[in-house]
Length: 429
Image (tube, rainbow, N blue to C red):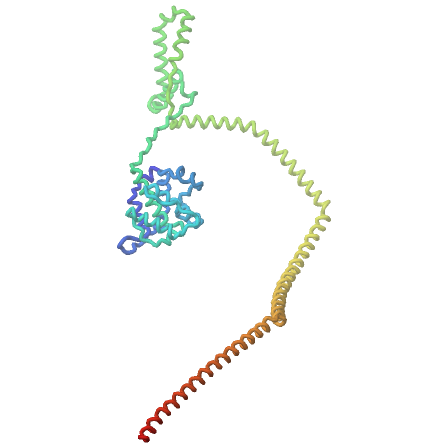
């Protein structure tokens, strides 16, 4: 899988994700194909392979005590809160792997601020994020896979990782094992096999009677020629030693062909003989076992009939008790239903009674409470004080008005005297 994942280029993944989302910078919405809904599963599998290349299991999961995500963790909705936390943790770790400083998000951080920071870091790498940030809040989906995949690619670029062509192992052909019994053949067996093959191949062309006559004449001629050299001067002990020395070298190893039909026929005959011999041994045991099982079944059947006859009245009583029990259960269910209904009515009446009691307590407390009377008295006292103050103000105003009237009257009389005095003076002169 690692080799297969290495074949896919990062740019191809990015283009595939953008085409699967049907979004682009400055372009209209592209029609989604029938496989676009499953493209995020492919992106998620590639993301897991890239995270393994970045050694996230040792550097992140073990240190943070996190479980490794599955191959389709961010593609399917399972637990939104846990998935969002895992997404933020992986994104922060990948951003730090790219050489940028990014604080690890905490559990109580604002998710909107965290998402905006992640998207700003993603845009700083020149990646497009033309989708609303709310798409990342769920913690799963194609946009989450796209963001993490882009960050993983940037981290691989930062550490200097390059994609190479996959190297396929050369498969070696397995050598066929040759059984030891058929591996070594003596020369006599080889001669017999060659003779049999020759006779099989030439039986349609040579008459057997002619062949026998020819072989008989040849044998008689050779025996007549070799009568003079039948006696041997070789010592028997030396001959046996020479035979023992040369015997290992006379063995010929021939590689058998498992596809030969003769070998299959021999194996079939061997298996047939083995099955027949095993069947003869096991047939007696199986017959005995069959007879014992038959006798045991007959005994069980007779005992069952005897027990049924002896316990017939008890069975009848049991059936009657079962019928009575079923009737009692039905009555119990009916009574239980009535009790439930009455319990509900009792709860409703109790609630109404509590409400009436509460109202009576409120009215009684209002009747016996002297707080309103005290408030009235305080209000009267305040009114009296305000009345006295108003009376004083009215007296002051009346006094002021009287003074002004008197002053005005004095001014008028003075003016009148001033006007009368010149007239008298003129009359005097």
